[in-house]
Length: 407
Image (cartoon, rainbow, N blue to C red; front, side, top):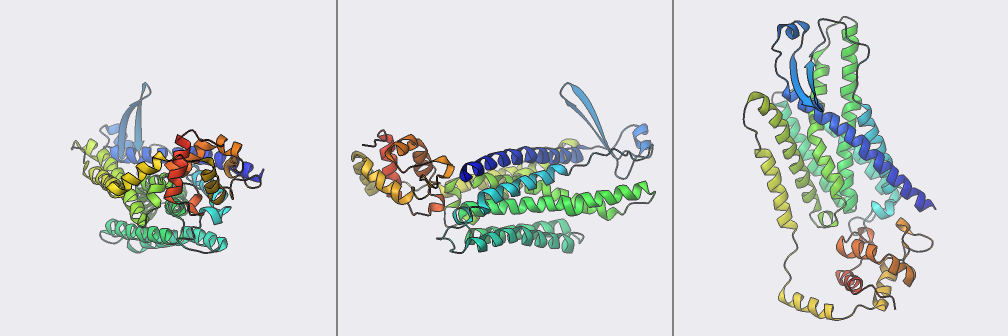
């Protein structure tokens, strides 16, 4: 029953996390588009009101006219009812951390730890995973504070943060199971994005609003910091998404150089995102769309595809495979593999994902799932904790393709 309830918590938290993430990312993308599509106001009326930029848009059968005031409207007091974009961020982080807790922290020995990578206790792995969030935020925030306002500060901060992400990726893949490492790096960056909103963007905006309503001239540092962190969040978005998605694909994180795979995927996402940001500016300025960064990002993905492609089998391996394919894979052989590699987590007492494999009938019922998870995706056993061999996976494949006999 406990496993069943945890599965429901997993499903509902994942659903809520995706919904809130869509709201946050959609809002972020829209405001980046808006900021980079603004043009100076043409009419004297808008100039007189203090409008610094305007954008006309058409959507859903109507026309929209967005105005941006860098400080405050000149023609009226600042409205009491202001829309604040922050609950999308907080809700995304809260649901994501809750999902991480239910799936990874409650099952640290299975999901966080791969003893072939690093053999440590669940408590130590959990502590280290939580420390990732804190250490990365402190380091990132320190880089921004130390170099953000210097000459060429944006470039220096960008390079510094990129190097920091590379180091974090290497450390995560060095100590955690590959799947957990990819997720941990993505959630680490996502935590920093929410921390930007919580510690800098929203507090800065509140101070500006309070100063304006008090008739004071707002300190420009709040706007500068908020803009800097908002831009960082924009470039973090696609790397976070690909890190979260890629942990579902074993062939990405199971290799010896998985940290390089993760870094290249995230770099490709950031480059592609930059092309879209630059596209908005180019469109307003009447220039060509600068797709160069997206091309480089796409080339990185193509390079990864070629690098990770399985090597063609040798003549001897082909001959061996043909010989094995000619041999029937009987239930007795499969039973031995399942008992040794799978039943410890899929039995009457502990039936992970509501899958039991202890009897012939149960194995027959879940034959397709066994085939998909163990031979096609190679995700099970989780982190290959029971050390299932390629030969055993091939035998399961031949057994399933011959009709999954259990007699």
